[in-house]
Length: 149
Ligand SMILES: [Zn+2]
Image 1 (cartoon, rainbow, N blue to C red):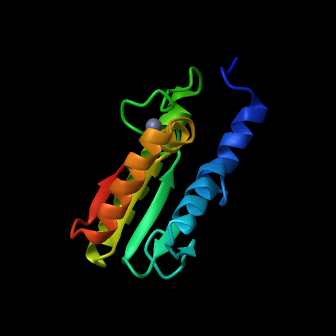
Image 2 (image 1 turned 120 degrees about the vertical axis):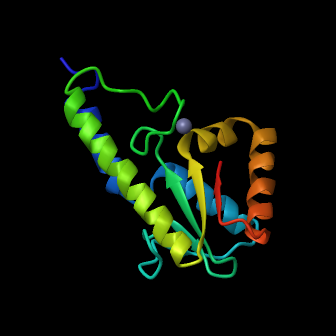
Image 3 (image 1 turned 30 degrees about the horizontal axis):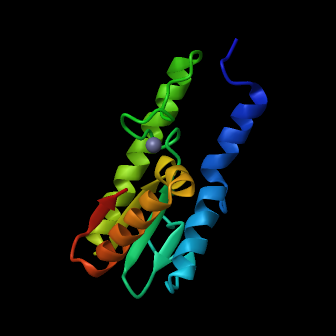
């Protein structure tokens, strides 16, 4: 038997494609409250980022740790069964992410990846939350093209 139930899996499956997930809404709300303005799922930007800030020419991706294989993260576990199926799926996701990363770089669009586990921690730890928010603010103003939090 699978370690996750069919219901959980279909929820997971929906999560990778679905928009407006909880971590995404949380991040959007925070950025908005800090005065940042953005568009959502902009079709004009490579990878259709969850959040795009025109003023800072920055695409923001809220990555689920399981689907996007956050390295060394506890949420990035390997399901116990149908390992081959999952491996293929994960490889495809990783490949797509790296293609998008390269496209953004070629288009001179800055890319900020925020992992779901960081957002979870932000919700629980106000100190960590403000650290992340200042790192984001600095990144927007910097010349750096890529950052992961
Ligand atoms: Zn993670």
